[in-house]
Structure formats: C-alpha cells, structure tokens
Image 1: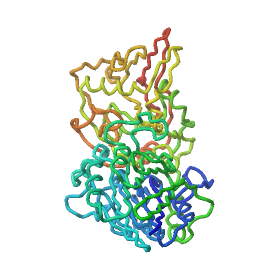
Image 2: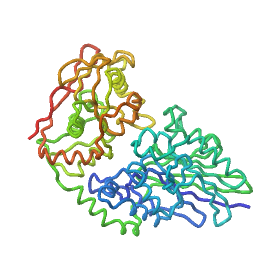
Image 3: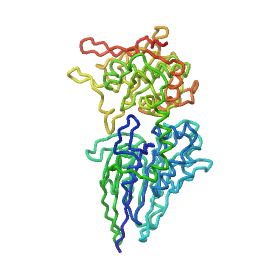
Image 4: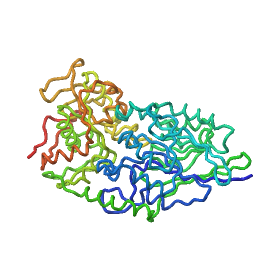
Length: 522
C-alpha cells in the first residue's frame, strides 16, 4: 500500500517574524510570517520547527524586557499549525521559566530526548509516534547540541540534565523499531563535515549530524549552522538543513510503499505575501518595538564607523573599545574583552536604541574572571589564531574562522592590556609580551588579573577552554544592550578616538592592542 507524508521544516528563526532585519524600513523576503504564508500542505503534512525561535531579534528582546513574554510568539506558531518543535540552545537564553511559558502556550509538542529539567516543569518529550490521516505511522525524535552546557548561564544549567545527543537519538530509534513506518530525527546541531566536499568543519560535541545520520533514521532535519542543504543522502539517512531568520524553509516528500521508503526534498524561499492573521495579532507589538527602537538615547561627537574585520583586528577597533569601556564601567574592572559580530554595524552621531541593537546583537551579560598571567597568555594565543601570515607577507584571516560558516565573533578585542603578536612564530608561541596599561608593568605567568568577559565568552566557547570554570569574581546580570543604553544616560555625548596601532618591521607583524588612551567623554 502506498502512502505519502510531507514534512515542512523551519529552524533558527531567532524571533525574526516580520520581513525586516530592523536595520531600516526596507522589507526583505524573510521572517516567519512570510514563511508561513508560503506553506502548502494537506492532511498528511507535518509542520516542524528545529529550535532557536524565541531569542535573537529586537522583537523577542522587547517581549522579554517589556514583560509581555513569549506567548504572542507561541500564538503565532499555533495559528500556523506547527505540529512539533525541537529545542535550540538559544531557546534557553531568557531562562527556563520564560521557555516554560512558551512551551506551555504551544499546541505543538516539544521533542528533546537529551534535555530534562530536574523539576519536570518543562513539557518536553523524548519522542512521539504520529499516525497520519492515511494511516502512516511516523516516529519523531528531537535532540539538541550538548554544547548548550558551555553556552548557557550556570543558573539555567543547574536546573537541567543534558545528555549525549547521538546516544539519546539512538536510544529513541531503538524504541521506535517495529512501531513506525517512517522515522524522523530533528537535531538542533550541524554537520561535522561539509556535506558537499567532505572536509571537516568542526570537532567536538557541537555539531554531530553525520553521526546521527549514521544511526538509521529515514529523515534527519538539521539546524544551528544556518546553512542551506536542500537534501542529501548521508550515512543512510536523508538529511536537510535550512538557513536562519526565515530566509527559507524545506519541504520533504516521503513515499512509503510496503516498507520501501522514497524521499525527495527541496528548499523554498518565502515570497512577498505574509500570513495576515498572524501579522494582525502582532502588529500592535511590532509598532511598539519600532517606536522603542527609534528613540534617541545619546550621541557621538563624530560617527563611530565600522571597518572590515581584518582591518579592525590588525589595527584595533574604536567600536570594540567603546563596548569594552561600557563593560569596564559596568563591571568595575580595568581589563575587558569583547568581540564583534559577522555583520559589523557602527554608529552615526545620533544614537537610537535601534542603533544599539544593530551594533550589539545578543543579550549577553557580563562576568569578571580571575586569571593568571599564563591563562591570559593562553587566551591571547587563541585570539592570535585568527591571523594567518602568507609566504608573500600578507596577513589574512585564518580559514578556520570562515568555514563552515563565518565566525569572526570568536576573535576578541582587549582593553586595558597591550600585547605583542609575532605572526612569524608558530601557533602557541606568538604572544611575546603582555603589559598592564594601568601601571605599564608586564604581567608574569604567576600574576593574577581580573578580566571582564561577556557571559558567552566566559563559558569558554570559541576555543577558549582556558576560561572554562575559572573563578568568578562578580557578575553583572544585565543584558549588554541595556548597559550601553545606561552608559549613554550618564555620558550623553561620547568622543571616540583610535586606541590601537599596528607596526611593521620587515616581515614581522607586531600587533599592539590597544593603546593606553581612553575615550574623551563630556
């Protein structure tokens, strides 16, 4: 008997509901409202989301800060007819209580076999067997990247048990054997190898999709990497992956004919239409979001412009130093580190809340760690991996920061320290001196210093294992966007200056980051 199933899959929406990136008034073909309008389904269709839904945009930031909460977003998912969702690592960013409000309002069932809260407050299930109208039995499992443990705040993780994603997916598949006709795993994680070239993209526990594909699920729906894979047979499974921010969704058609499974899939871009019922329910909130975003909060004496990543990393960044100054003041610390994002946005002379959201994208809080000089040197050596010195003498960005996706945000800019990097030397021996700018003295291997990091970096993510589990001196549990806004309240006009310089001596590159100067403030 021949029976069919259609699976519509979205992932990594990150709260972008409208066809806008919030940077300007121009509409784009993106956002969940546009994606939903493009759905084409029948009674034998399942609609599934792969996670990272409730955090990441000015809209979701407003829902969190205003106290409205995630229920309007859950309401949109309900109107769209989602059947199942998986959990992404960023879905925990606003805390387990916030996530619980979202899941408790959803009609869709949440599947995540490798995460449980110890108090059993989150309505999360390991798997589900869904019988379609035509009688086809579909077994579904959800798992999330275990690297969640490294990224989330300790107060969030203290309430959770996070297991091995591959092992959890295998255990569920064993339970589904003989009880289903088609098996589907929704994995909020990416590929360790490029699906096209076979080159290794990452190692460790963050991305393990190829291992999950090898387990034997008929269909594996992948997320997290923000990459497009319309569909490919990998390790015995048919694998699919979609881009972020509602820039595409996937459609997979499965035919089961007496146990023989045929699968075909493709990616679709949203059109110009939007899901009107959902838009109507959210428009009043969207108007308030835009009103808040356009509120002036301060000014620079002259524009603080963004530069290309390599230029900023080599010469130093006024924008990064501004963020570090804010961090130092908020955390009461003389040494600070921050990163810039893939899409760097500067500031004009007049600064609005929208400008802050453009320039600093994520709701990171601050953590001050106590590090030894040896740990600081190890940290700076990791930063130096961002650079590759070619035989021609040209400095370029290392390939590891560009594939499988660009992650310039794993290069950090230091404030309060001057350090020298010799790119002629081998990795691990590039940092030649470290000077504390407050007193001009070198930092010895046994010396200790307090350094302010974002809560994201303090977990050690990005190859900074030397930061993991280091003594916490203090924390500032206020999102960085709010700290920047508060900074302008006490410093209405800020005068940016260039803090850092680059020196060339023959073929030796000495990067001095930053100088001892600070911003003039009125």
